[in-house]
Every structure is written in C-alpha cells, then in structure tokens.
Image (tube, rainbow, N blue to C red):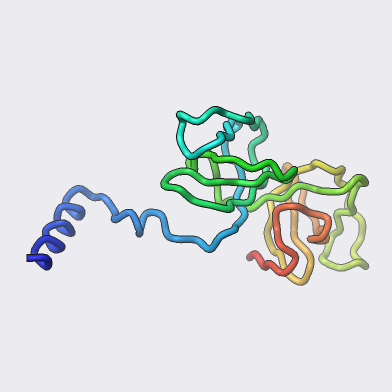
Length: 163
C-alpha cells in the first residue's frame, strides 16, 4: 500500500507540474553568502510576516550571510553584524561584496600586488564578484571591473573560490 501511495503522489506531482520541495530548494551548507535583490527589503525579528520589522534595507546588491533557514525565510547577518529574518524571494544568489575598512582600496588591472592601479573604491562601495581565488576577486562596480584583495571585502571568505 505504501508503494502505491508513493507512486500516486509522484503521478499527481508530475501531473500538476510541481517539483517536490526538496528538489525546488536544495539544502545548502550553512552559512553561505547571498545578496539582497530588492530595492526595499524588510528584516524581521522572526520567520513570518507577523513578526515586526526591525530594519528596512534600501540597497539592492548588499551582501548578506545566510545563517539559518526556516521554510521560505532566511536568517541573515549583514555587514554590520545585524541579524534577523528575510523572505528568500527578496534575496539572490548573486555574489556581491562591500568594501570594508576606513580607507579607500586599490582596484588593480590583474590579481597581483604588481598590478596597475585602475582606481580606488571607498569603504561602503558594493560590487559584484567573479573570478575569486588565491586571495583576489574581480569586482564589478557599476560596469567598471578590476581586481581587489579579498581581505578588503566583506561578502566572501578568504579561502573561497568563485568562477
């Protein structure tokens, strides 16, 4: 009887065109980095709309660290260490980072200390990441890209590699 019920459930799922929950949201190893995709996103004190909002983010692409998952909610930590819950549909897997520190950082033409200076990015600047490895990332800031040392960024771990 159990096999029949499983088979029937699979047929109903296939007929409706729905994916099983496990396939739709694969389990990711926590913690991981993501970014806020919405221009306005509320951080809540708990994993439901019934919980009060504790913060309103108005900066798309801001990197966040996902530290827990509850259904369609993600508990996140932002670059300042603020924690709370955000709906997953307000977030993206696009990898971004924010320049940390108190002084501008060098953006170079290649991933090497001997690279030529392209320009400098001020603390708080957010950009999209790619080609990360060996302590360097290519960072795209509004269409201008260059290489920056990973230790100057929040949004990627020092030993992490990205394509």
